Length: 457
Image 1: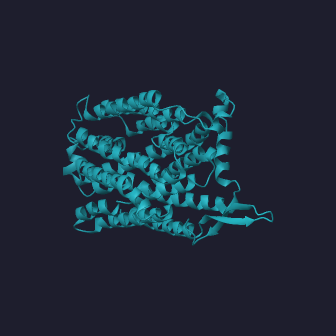
Image 2: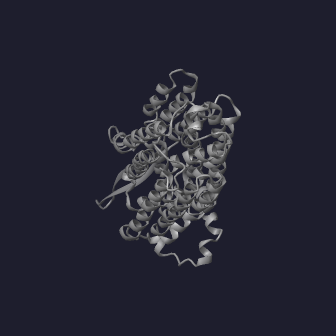
Image 3: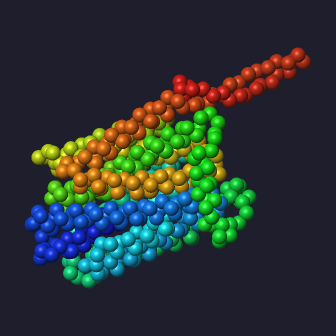
């Protein structure tokens, strides 16, 4: 809801900054020149705002995983929604004063960033879920948790479309103001829910830790803990597999940047309205959420297949979807090609929960919070780099679909990495041996033997 609304609000403010428009419809529908200038200006300030947001979040999320492992999962879960209450209130004020400069969005970006951003609560909830689930069911539980993003996203995008379908921009209490007030109320409800409904929980390793002082909460040691989790030596080549998994995750996140932050501007140049884009985006979210809730668990059971295969299926889906989306601008039937991407993107969110599940099975229980936090750090780093670099490419080249084709190639590289991880995976078999002693007694010995590649269970 917030992502789409901020994109549209940035466009509106950029349009109102022009000298020649009589009203907002001149930018949206009538004067092609005005619309092009407004889109360029909107892209510039979206790039600055998102870069600042992800830079702040990148620094802050070094701490969230370590806090989660030391203090329990509940306390860090409270920080992001509290930050969202403040940031959405700032956005409501900027909407009330509709003709303020888009640069003021840097204030709300800073507030969202230092409170871990919208992805901060995801990192803490993954750690929370991992503490309660067995390894056999963890992939399914993480997939269900991931699907909540898309169920919420579908509803949120529809709400944004309903609020912003017809907006009187000259009215002080306009629909942008009402939407951000609504977001602040939702986030306040989340805060109350976490305080009163989420049980406090600490693992044995957390309980044995000494309490943290205020100064030690912000110690740079937390950064070292996160990095040590990734780069420390591990048996059976696990460190190399963790690093390869994170590289694949980075490539996936770069593809997500293109989907989230360039799709809106891409279809805007084709003459789509905000309502058109909201309908498309919400249908895409709904299909992806359905796949995670209903299809993802079935793939694990009928037949039972490893996380690697699920990730490869998702990467293939994401690669083809991005490629077709980018080529749509060259076709006279671009609307049909774009809507076909809803089906092509169906499995595109499978790789992230699959890789997170693989990582959770590789590290020790007291490292889960740090590994999930590092994936959040990686996500923000990719968003930081991708937003700046890919938005620059978007406007440097006449063919605006180039960014989507680049993202498709990155997904293909991640696909190859997943193939490598599958064929170098290590599986364990249990060997039983019966030993008969001289006195006639019998002893059964059970040992676990590792095997490469062909052994599945």
